[in-house]
Image (cartoon, rainbow, N blue to C red; front, side):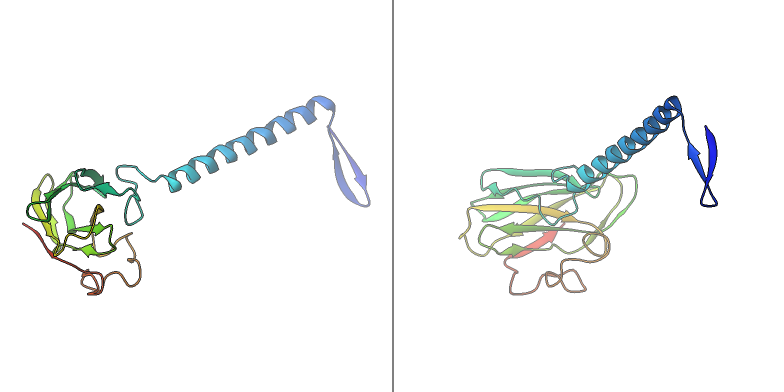
Amino acid sequence: MFFKLLNGKRQVRLDVSERKTYMNRIQRTLATIAIMLAVVISGCSSDRGTDAKEGEESGIELALNESYDEVRNGARLVLSYDAQSNSFNGTVENTTEETLKRVRVEVHLSNGKELGPTTPADLEPGERRDVKLTATNKDFDGWTAHPEVGISEHGSGERRGEHDRDGRSEQRHKEGVSDIK
């Protein structure tokens, strides 16, 4: 490598082997950046992780004879529909080593109605509570569900218009009776 002055500025001249080394470093740096970007993008777009969910529902609607069993933000929700009582019954459990604050459960019906959220309850590590959400009519053939943890969904605020400050659904969306026992 040698330096040459051109218009009062220093210019670097590299021999062939130095150019190859320099280009290899650039290629490795760009490859590392591309891999890191791919990892970040795939992590953000993950739709069915156990704890990584960020959106309201998983996007997969269950049939009335199917059960929901997933962990979200440390809360494991196991829920199924009972046609005889027209209700969704199951449990919500804390799978973490810390207390989960204000745990609630919602069910979204295929007819656009929402059941819940249930009354917020703090769950100690390993604690499991029964959940029951009852629909008032039977004009649906599918459903999705999810637990919510904390003051609001997504950590900083819920979807605008879905819940008021107390975590309750707006009346135009709400149907049925719900409870965590």
